[in-house]
Amino acid sequence: MTPRPNSFPDAASEAPRSIGETLSDAASQLKNKGSDLGQTATQKLNETRSAAASGLESAASALHQGGEKVTGLAHTTADKLNSTADYLRKNDVKRMMADVQQLVVNNPGPSLIAAVVIGFFMGRALRSDD
Image 1 (cartoon, one colour):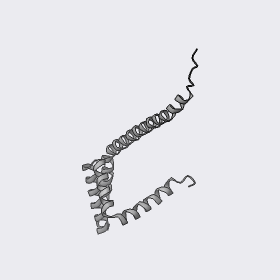
Image 2 (cartoon, rainbow, N blue to C red; image 1 turned 30 degrees about the horizontal axis):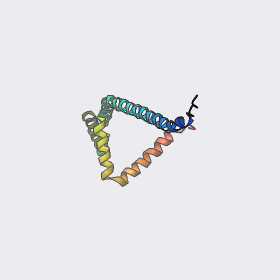
Image 3 (tube, rainbow, N blue to C red; image 1 turned 45 degrees about the vertical axis):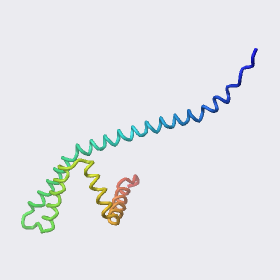
Image 4 (cartoon, rainbow, N blue to C red; image 1 turned 90 degrees about the vertical axis):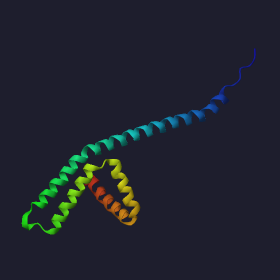
């Protein structure tokens, strides 16, 4: 009877490949989940653009209807709100993200300051001890 070779070295040599395949599968699944979440978020943002635009337009209208008491600053603000509402209606989320990227590239300093301020206020709003 011929002695049976030990199968332990074969199993050890296959382990790294098996781990690599497992990690690759996990990374692929994570990438797919991230892509699905991104598409869902984009779809939700696209669905709410019209409502946001209508809200901005209503605020602009209220500022314009303030009568003689409304200053030029309020009218300017109302005009900006109307412009923003029009922009929201005309552009999808991908286009808006491209515009934001271009704004950041053209104005890195003010963009960084705005990001810090927004991050600060979001952090304050999300704190659980308030």
